[in-house]
Image (cartoon, rainbow, N blue to C red; front, side, top):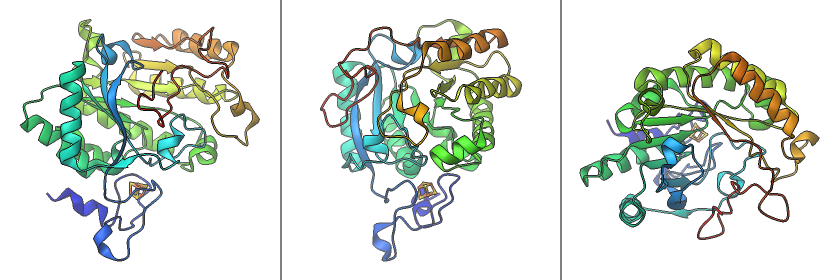
Amino acid sequence: MDLLRFYKSCILCPRNCGVSRSRGDGKTQPGFCGEWDQVRVAYVGPHFGEEPPITGKDGSGTVFFAGCTLRCSFCQNYQISRGGLGMRTSLGELVEGVLKMVKRYHVHNINLVTPDHFFPHVFRLVSMLRKKGLNLPMVYNLSGYQSVEMLKLAEEHSDIYLPDYKYSDSPLAASLSRCPDYPKVALGAIAEMIRQKGFLDSCLTGSELARKGVLVRHLILPGNIDNSINALTGLFVEFGRGLPLSLMSQYHPVLHQEDEALNRSLAEEEFTRVYTHARELGFEHLFIQFPEKTPKDGQGASPFLPDFRQAEPFR
Ligand code: SF4
């Protein structure tokens, strides 16, 4: 199947813009994601901020794609998701870059961050890497806003899914990411990911590194704790206590927000409410990012906050 045809009337994500992103078409325009049919990448390199079974001791081999289908108003990676940072890259160059990273850093997996608006190229990238003999797990680091149809196409090109479940609250999803259907779409997408890969295997086997499966992430938003409480309850009801779940407290305000609460970091008592709820529900495989007691820079920014203008975006 020629997957590049998806760029001609783009339905690569549930926004279903239907625009032609193909440069040669004459009537081209980027869709909501802001990207054309040429891959743009902001960073290829090892990253040590993922959960332990993904990071391991040598890091996860990340490829950060530019653009995004969600474009959340508070995006922690706003420089590349909404700000235009990133370089056009051919697939050949990207293959070389990934292989160089693997050789130099011995990363444990290839971590494709926000790849869905470039799925046709990403599937090719994975095929090319495998043809070169690379047998590391392919991690799809996703917003959760994916269609089941596209995930079915991703099945043979993926090993691990790291989807977010950002919102249980539809009006909040509408106001921060302009997708009121997020809660329903994301639960359907996560169900499909679990159907394909099951829960993260390392949680079941106790091995140090994951090779297959699904781990769901939830970023707690300041002032929106009910959204988090209900998100956890929804995940528990849909997938049970065996679902591997990562609770993230790293939120840091990067762009001014209309919702005043989002112009500050997460308060410790807010984190405690959500954490306590997760424990009460009885999730068996929780990965917890406790709020940092001592921020690493003068502005109180989280060390997880990247700066993609730097050669090494992660401090
Ligand atoms: S990938 Fe981009 S252009 Fe395509 S449907 Fe999604 S937002 Fe629209």
